[in-house]
Amino acid sequence: MENHIPLTDNGQQRMSDYFTSSQSSITASQTATGGGAFLEKFGRSIQNLRKQSDLQLIRCVQKNSESDRSYFIEPQLSRLTLFFEDKKMEQEYRENVHSLTEQDTIATLANSRFNTYFDVFVSTVVFVVISISLFISYELTILWLVVFVILCLIQVCGIALCFRRFVEFSESLFSFCSRWYGWNAFGGTLVSVPIIAVLCNFVCSRLFFTANVSDYLYSYLLCVGIVHFCNFTQLNCWMKNCLATCFGILFICLILSGICPCDVPNLKMENSSVNLTFENLSYADNTTVVPVTGLYLYNWEILIDVLLLLVLIWLLNREFEIGYRLSFHASFVANRDKLQVQRLKTQADWLIYNIVPEHVAVQLKKNAKYSENFKDVAVIFASIVNFNEMYDESYLGGKEFLRVLNELIGDFDELLTLPEFQSVEKIKTIGSTFMAASGLNSKMRLEQSDPHAHLFALMEFSLAMQKVIDNFNRDLIEFNLILRTGYNFGDVTAAVIGNTKMYYDIWGDAVNIASRMDSTGVSGRIQVGEQCLSVLEKRYIFEPRGSMYVKGKGDMNLFLLVDRRNENEIAK
Image (cartoon, rainbow, N blue to C red; front, side, top):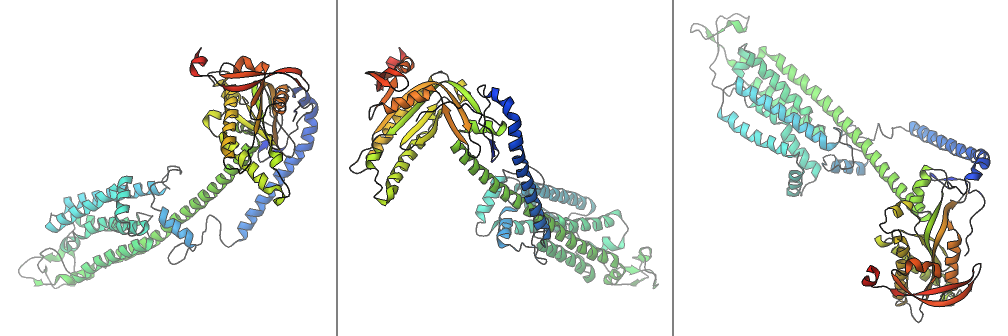
């Protein structure tokens, strides 16, 4: 159990971005002489590792380029419906495409949350502009007033979608259907608001038989209402295209049918001339009467414009949804891989933190060497003295007894997770002996209000281990495990050694004495040396055991822990 300070350099070896070596003054003198050999030996190894990594990356890129579809740019989409061919991906798209709770993503317009805000803003601006234009250009009717109030309520509900509480309330209210269908149903209504407002003010006489600015304005507003179906890129393109087509066909039917919502008499033409122009139209009594429907034949241009506009809407909506689905697919795959990498990193960190302490691993990431000298580090060796009496290889090859030992050591390890023992580090287990130390974190020691707090923490940890043994013995039948602990503190050196496998350990005379305190101790008790009393007697009561020969130290006065002092005694 003796640990000695090594006299040779630790070397270094890269292992999962961690390096094992030394940076203290103890090995500083050897760096100059061994640096060249180190770089020559391990520099080539690191270079070979990088070369293999680059070759593997090239193979992955080549394999991806040989496939029919690109991993990010061209996901498998149905050419007809534009749905993902992967059902799981389509399900993820429908569940997250309208999500407003993206907390881990960067706040950009590419996010569904800000995309929704932007779409609602555009929809509100378009509706306000169209409504103001209609109120200014045309007379107020009861039909338009009623429809305007209804459309305003719909638009207010659309603005409310920007607030998370309203979204959560609406989703709970319509929990019988999925989020995707609910958003598409309401989005289809919201995207139709401008064109509904325009069609409610359809006046055939003004549109076709006068040359006022308001007549041209109506055509412009109609085009804006149809183009507005390109808004809300998150909605299904087939739904938006069908709605745009239905409203376009409705407008064409109003034109071709000759039905006017206003009271317009049959218009009269001044002569029977075939040159039908707006200048020839008159209401004179001595002219012939021509039905209104006959004049629609001279205005096919607007019908062609509407049809061409619908074709454009179909193409744009299809491309917009393809682009949005591509963006979602790339983001989804990237986030999925990011989470997987994060899980692997967390697992790797967990493994490395079980090999070396966390503060040591952080330094190893930054530097190629680690070793550090500490003063007044507390060390314990806790041995289960009668474990060999319980161990019997004739029963299941000893596996059952090793399972019992593993459970006990696991209970000891759980103590290390408690806040009061954050300064305690498990060093290793040697058979049935548990080794731990306290005071190996320089940063934590600087934050201590009491410079001896880590010494008391390790003593409290030793007492907690005794309680764990007592509780563990309650579950054992006809056998009680006995714990013997040796305690000491002093100067030590902590370092990570090994070229192929990292190994964290501490060396120093204080470590050897702590081991002797255990080997010469009393079963069920905690034994310390006389040099520890100057600090520990402030909080604990000890009884002398007498003088005893200790290997390498000669005769030493030893003491056994009796109990803690009460608060009044500590205050004095």
